[in-house]
Image 1 (cartoon, helix red, strand yellow):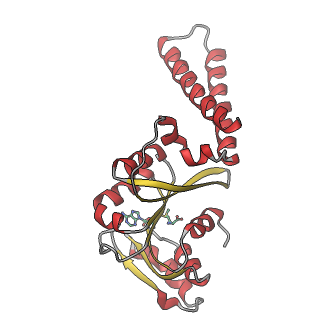
Image 2 (cartoon, rainbow, N blue to C red; image 1 turned 180 degrees about the horizontal axis):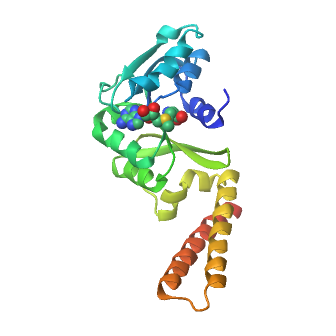
Length: 233
Ligand SMILES: C[S@@+](CC[C@H](N)C(=O)[O-])C[C@H]1O[C@@H](n2cnc3c(N)ncnc32)[C@H](O)[C@@H]1O
């Protein structure tokens, strides 16, 4: 498999499970799960029938292709409770993932595992999980094509983080002193410091708006340094 992000998602799926891959698009996750004998069956689902053509083209090259069932559906709409063990939703914004889970919460809760690869809005997604009685079992992070990704594996359970920064950056990754998270935080720190330097050098006098922007950036820098300190101890 060429894509590291998708490889990490496949690695998070428990052996012998029945999986639904929501928003499957190219269908690489279902294909690899069956090819590598990880899943017993996969429902490869997408809101767009045209997107599913990419997977249809691949199925001729796969033994056991009958173990993949293609479905056109909005989110979890066409899944029954307890129909699958694992629900994968990845390559979408965090807010869309929240909407998909929220629209069929009882189906989401009937699965043993949720594997969620949000492209953004990780704070919102983690908050949603805790507010709706899911706990975060594991998190994986990675860089691919210079973009930083976090993938969450969650299950039904009660959990609460005391520190808001743990919702933003991932308590599991902070506690496990993730090298990728460390790199990401340092990059963000540099970006924000450069913006402040630029704002200060461009202006003869600093306007109220500029000062507000600088204050916000300094707050963000303080947060980044706080998380970095926890990782570097
Ligand atoms: C960028 S692709 C992600 C593909 C793959 N899951 C990945 O991680 O690389 C997003 C896919 O989600 C599908 N999608 C968007 N909204 C959806 C929804 N509400 N329900 C199901 N699929 C959806 C799109 O049609 C598209 O094929």
